[in-house]
Length: 139
Image (cartoon, rainbow, N blue to C red; front, side, top):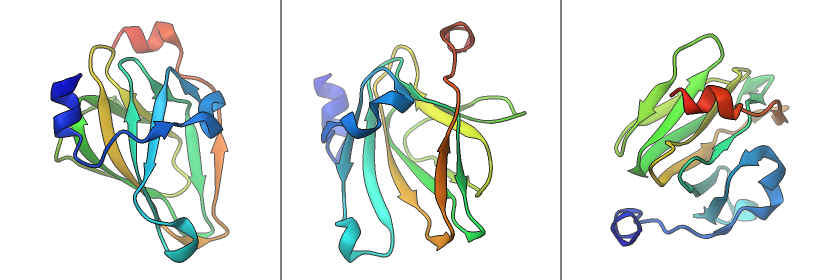
């Protein structure tokens, strides 16, 4: 863990309790900007080994979506209908609006990414079903 913490330069933050119902396992949130004073919400999200969020969609009439910048550890990203992508530090994932997807840590690694919520018109997040243990364990 100390090796991961030294590489996670933006810090783990506090337990992400407000969104715990949308995650399997423990995640942590470290906001990097004050949402009220900025046009973008930017935060470092850290996942304990095996933690992942539910399938979800970032809806937008125009603009919108999310950008992930992988910081430390190893993770997974998957869009519906596509193969999972292994995430490593330095990788950038652009998630288009209205695309069903999930992301999180690999089962044997802590993982952190910077999440940038792209501003847009009529944006919202729709949280969907869990990524099942049976499916996840096969990755």
